[in-house]
Figure (spheres, rainbow, N blue to C red):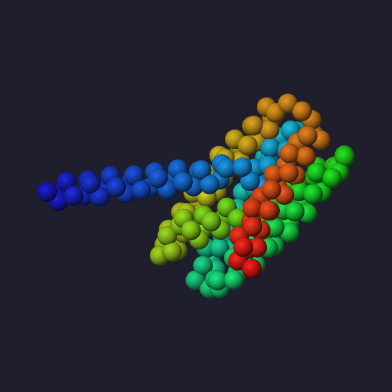
Length: 194
Protein backbone atom coordinates (compact mmCIF):
# COMPACT_ATOMS: atom_id res chain seq x y z
CA UNK A 1 0.00 0.00 0.00
CA UNK A 2 2.82 2.41 0.91
CA UNK A 3 4.52 1.57 -2.38
CA UNK A 4 1.36 2.51 -4.30
CA UNK A 5 1.08 5.85 -2.50
CA UNK A 6 4.76 6.56 -3.06
CA UNK A 7 4.44 5.77 -6.79
CA UNK A 8 1.37 8.00 -7.02
CA UNK A 9 3.23 10.84 -5.29
CA UNK A 10 6.24 10.43 -7.60
CA UNK A 11 3.92 10.45 -10.64
CA UNK A 12 2.30 13.72 -9.51
CA UNK A 13 5.75 15.23 -8.88
CA UNK A 14 6.96 14.25 -12.37
CA UNK A 15 3.77 15.62 -13.93
CA UNK A 16 4.17 18.82 -11.92
CA UNK A 17 7.80 19.11 -13.05
CA UNK A 18 6.83 18.52 -16.67
CA UNK A 19 4.08 21.13 -16.44
CA UNK A 20 6.50 23.63 -14.87
CA UNK A 21 9.04 23.03 -17.67
CA UNK A 22 6.34 23.44 -20.32
CA UNK A 23 5.10 26.68 -18.75
CA UNK A 24 8.66 28.04 -18.48
CA UNK A 25 9.37 27.06 -22.10
CA UNK A 26 6.21 28.85 -23.28
CA UNK A 27 7.12 32.01 -21.34
CA UNK A 28 10.61 32.20 -22.84
CA UNK A 29 9.79 31.08 -26.39
CA UNK A 30 7.08 33.76 -26.72
CA UNK A 31 8.04 36.80 -28.80
CA UNK A 32 9.73 39.46 -26.74
CA UNK A 33 12.64 41.88 -26.68
CA UNK A 34 15.50 39.39 -26.30
CA UNK A 35 14.10 37.05 -28.92
CA UNK A 36 13.65 39.95 -31.36
CA UNK A 37 17.30 40.96 -30.95
CA UNK A 38 18.46 37.36 -31.39
CA UNK A 39 16.41 37.05 -34.58
CA UNK A 40 17.76 40.38 -35.90
CA UNK A 41 21.30 39.30 -35.03
CA UNK A 42 20.87 36.10 -37.03
CA UNK A 43 19.61 38.04 -40.05
CA UNK A 44 22.66 40.32 -39.76
CA UNK A 45 24.90 37.23 -39.60
CA UNK A 46 26.11 37.93 -36.08
CA UNK A 47 27.95 35.20 -34.20
CA UNK A 48 25.40 32.94 -32.53
CA UNK A 49 27.73 32.07 -29.65
CA UNK A 50 28.28 35.72 -28.76
CA UNK A 51 24.58 36.60 -28.74
CA UNK A 52 23.48 33.43 -26.93
CA UNK A 53 26.22 33.95 -24.32
CA UNK A 54 25.01 37.53 -23.84
CA UNK A 55 21.47 36.22 -23.41
CA UNK A 56 22.61 33.64 -20.85
CA UNK A 57 24.56 36.27 -18.92
CA UNK A 58 21.57 38.64 -18.94
CA UNK A 59 19.13 36.02 -17.68
CA UNK A 60 21.70 34.70 -15.21
CA UNK A 61 22.24 38.17 -13.74
CA UNK A 62 18.51 38.95 -13.64
CA UNK A 63 17.58 35.61 -12.04
CA UNK A 64 20.40 35.88 -9.49
CA UNK A 65 19.20 39.35 -8.53
CA UNK A 66 15.54 38.33 -8.28
CA UNK A 67 16.25 35.14 -6.35
CA UNK A 68 18.51 36.90 -3.86
CA UNK A 69 16.20 39.86 -3.37
CA UNK A 70 12.88 38.00 -3.13
CA UNK A 71 12.66 38.22 0.67
CA UNK A 72 13.55 41.93 0.66
CA UNK A 73 11.39 42.99 -2.28
CA UNK A 74 9.21 46.03 -1.58
CA UNK A 75 5.97 46.04 -3.59
CA UNK A 76 6.95 49.12 -5.63
CA UNK A 77 10.24 47.62 -6.83
CA UNK A 78 8.56 45.70 -9.64
CA UNK A 79 6.83 48.86 -10.90
CA UNK A 80 10.14 50.75 -10.87
CA UNK A 81 11.88 47.98 -12.80
CA UNK A 82 9.05 47.96 -15.33
CA UNK A 83 9.57 51.70 -15.92
CA UNK A 84 13.31 51.18 -16.41
CA UNK A 85 12.58 48.32 -18.84
CA UNK A 86 10.04 50.47 -20.72
CA UNK A 87 12.62 53.24 -21.11
CA UNK A 88 15.38 50.92 -22.32
CA UNK A 89 13.14 49.01 -24.74
CA UNK A 90 11.68 52.23 -26.16
CA UNK A 91 15.07 53.83 -26.76
CA UNK A 92 16.55 50.72 -28.35
CA UNK A 93 13.42 50.00 -30.41
CA UNK A 94 13.06 53.55 -31.73
CA UNK A 95 16.76 53.63 -32.51
CA UNK A 96 16.50 50.43 -34.54
CA UNK A 97 13.38 51.61 -36.39
CA UNK A 98 14.53 55.18 -37.11
CA UNK A 99 17.99 54.56 -38.47
CA UNK A 100 18.41 53.79 -42.13
CA UNK A 101 21.75 52.07 -41.70
CA UNK A 102 22.33 51.45 -38.03
CA UNK A 103 25.50 49.53 -37.34
CA UNK A 104 25.50 48.24 -33.82
CA UNK A 105 27.36 45.05 -34.66
CA UNK A 106 30.08 45.85 -32.12
CA UNK A 107 27.43 46.35 -29.45
CA UNK A 108 24.82 43.73 -30.39
CA UNK A 109 26.06 41.46 -27.60
CA UNK A 110 25.85 44.31 -25.09
CA UNK A 111 22.35 45.21 -26.31
CA UNK A 112 21.21 41.60 -25.90
CA UNK A 113 22.78 41.44 -22.41
CA UNK A 114 21.14 44.67 -21.19
CA UNK A 115 17.78 43.89 -22.78
CA UNK A 116 17.78 40.39 -21.31
CA UNK A 117 18.74 41.60 -17.83
CA UNK A 118 15.74 43.96 -17.92
CA UNK A 119 13.43 41.46 -19.61
CA UNK A 120 10.23 41.07 -17.57
CA UNK A 121 10.19 37.36 -18.38
CA UNK A 122 13.00 36.90 -15.83
CA UNK A 123 11.05 38.36 -12.93
CA UNK A 124 7.85 36.60 -14.04
CA UNK A 125 9.77 33.33 -13.84
CA UNK A 126 11.56 34.14 -10.57
CA UNK A 127 8.70 35.78 -8.69
CA UNK A 128 5.56 34.19 -10.12
CA UNK A 129 6.54 30.70 -11.28
CA UNK A 130 9.23 29.56 -8.83
CA UNK A 131 7.65 28.70 -5.46
CA UNK A 132 8.30 31.38 -2.84
CA UNK A 133 9.21 28.74 -0.24
CA UNK A 134 12.01 27.26 -2.40
CA UNK A 135 15.24 26.87 -0.46
CA UNK A 136 18.72 27.92 -1.65
CA UNK A 137 19.49 24.52 -3.20
CA UNK A 138 16.20 24.53 -5.08
CA UNK A 139 16.78 28.10 -6.28
CA UNK A 140 20.09 26.96 -7.75
CA UNK A 141 18.25 24.26 -9.68
CA UNK A 142 15.61 26.74 -10.87
CA UNK A 143 18.43 29.08 -11.96
CA UNK A 144 20.01 26.28 -14.03
CA UNK A 145 16.61 25.38 -15.51
CA UNK A 146 16.17 29.02 -16.54
CA UNK A 147 19.55 29.07 -18.30
CA UNK A 148 18.85 25.76 -20.05
CA UNK A 149 15.39 26.75 -21.27
CA UNK A 150 16.53 30.17 -22.46
CA UNK A 151 19.46 28.59 -24.34
CA UNK A 152 16.98 26.38 -26.19
CA UNK A 153 14.44 29.13 -26.90
CA UNK A 154 17.12 31.66 -27.85
CA UNK A 155 18.62 29.16 -30.29
CA UNK A 156 15.19 28.63 -31.86
CA UNK A 157 14.78 32.39 -32.43
CA UNK A 158 18.32 32.64 -33.81
CA UNK A 159 17.58 29.79 -36.25
CA UNK A 160 14.33 31.51 -37.24
CA UNK A 161 16.28 34.69 -38.01
CA UNK A 162 18.68 32.75 -40.23
CA UNK A 163 15.72 31.52 -42.29
CA UNK A 164 14.02 34.90 -42.69
CA UNK A 165 14.20 36.43 -46.13
CA UNK A 166 15.17 40.07 -46.25
CA UNK A 167 18.10 42.07 -45.19
CA UNK A 168 19.56 43.75 -42.23
CA UNK A 169 17.34 46.82 -42.52
CA UNK A 170 14.15 44.76 -42.34
CA UNK A 171 15.48 42.83 -39.34
CA UNK A 172 16.22 46.10 -37.51
CA UNK A 173 12.76 47.48 -38.28
CA UNK A 174 10.99 44.30 -37.14
CA UNK A 175 13.10 44.02 -33.98
CA UNK A 176 12.57 47.71 -33.23
CA UNK A 177 8.81 47.42 -33.64
CA UNK A 178 8.71 44.38 -31.35
CA UNK A 179 10.74 46.21 -28.69
CA UNK A 180 8.49 49.29 -28.79
CA UNK A 181 5.37 47.10 -28.76
CA UNK A 182 6.65 45.19 -25.75
CA UNK A 183 7.46 48.47 -23.97
CA UNK A 184 3.88 49.66 -24.58
CA UNK A 185 2.51 46.39 -23.21
CA UNK A 186 4.58 46.87 -20.06
CA UNK A 187 3.49 50.50 -19.75
CA UNK A 188 -0.25 49.86 -20.14
CA UNK A 189 -0.85 48.34 -16.66
CA UNK A 190 1.20 51.13 -15.09
CA UNK A 191 -0.96 53.78 -16.80
CA UNK A 192 -4.15 52.01 -15.71
CA UNK A 193 -2.88 51.97 -12.11
CA UNK A 194 -2.27 55.74 -12.21
